[in-house]
Amino acid sequence: MFTLSSALIAYGFLADTDVAAAYLGVVLPIVFLLGTFTWERLVQTALEDVIAVGVIQRIRRYYATLLPGAEYFFPQPTDRTAVHELLDIGTRSSWRGVVFTTSSAILAVNCIAGVRVSPWPCTA
Image (cartoon, rainbow, N blue to C red; front, side, top):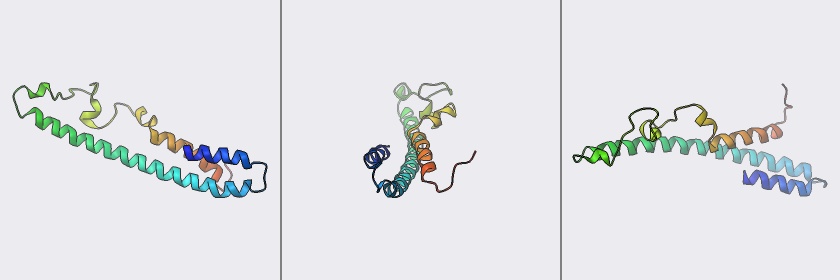
């Protein structure tokens, strides 16, 4: 996002010059690729986080069995509306949670920038 906004600000300074088109031809594809790589890595880290949360939950369940009364210190969610639901199953209770992530924001902005990079005109 920072790279895209910086590139657009730089374009604003070059807009009235002869090199503006060449600048956009070089910079926008690079920004688009950077956005694609950023989105991919954000999705990978989100999946790694879900796996790590599952491992942490297994460790918590094990610790809860070590001593009598230990389950008080390592509570387990009992239903899908539990406060720590993500700790138990690694997913959100609704598909709408996927829309409001950093990777989704990067993807949306990258799609908008990609429309400008594409050599094909947008058709509806």
